[in-house]
Length: 253
Ligand SMILES: [Zn+2]
Image (cartoon, rainbow, N blue to C red):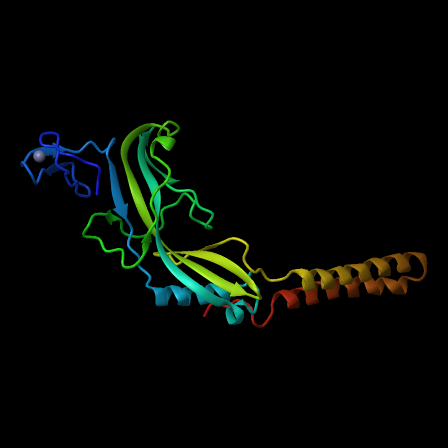
């Protein structure tokens, strides 16, 4: 619902998406909507359902930068659907229209402070919209917090609820949280179980050490030790590559 009232009778009026005028249902007065000062409430419905989201999450777990047994070992402990509030400011800056996104609530959940609108349809959030079991997170930051620092002049401002899945999962005794866009399937994460770089460093380091020793020995004793330089460098490159490209690696099927 927009925060709009009929100027004649004071009844709450409904502003339709994209319309400049509305008619008061109580007294019939035509109301001009000044979109620069009214805050409209919009919502972006989920495109993914929970089953799809779980499948996308599994694929994400198999990704190349993550621990290689994550796909097998990660235990999803909960999947939560939420609508997270952001402010959408449309401003005219230097003759051009510009959209600015600001979070309407502080959060530690990864990805939710980012300032992009994911692809998806935006509709007016009124009583006819079903949130289908998703928790609607209420804004805690007021619009005034941002207004003073925004560039240009106001064209429209809105409170927009964006859909997300919050995955909580357990891997090797530690709990993790990832957040997935409810339309894009994009996964945001912080402190995720990454693939260990230790074996790679060890093998490559060993190879370079061998090359270094070969160089020294070749210089101070006999040039035959220079062979070790090439052997060491080759070892570093070949084995390093093999460690990175583990068979369980990350192809997303
Ligand atoms: Zn009225």
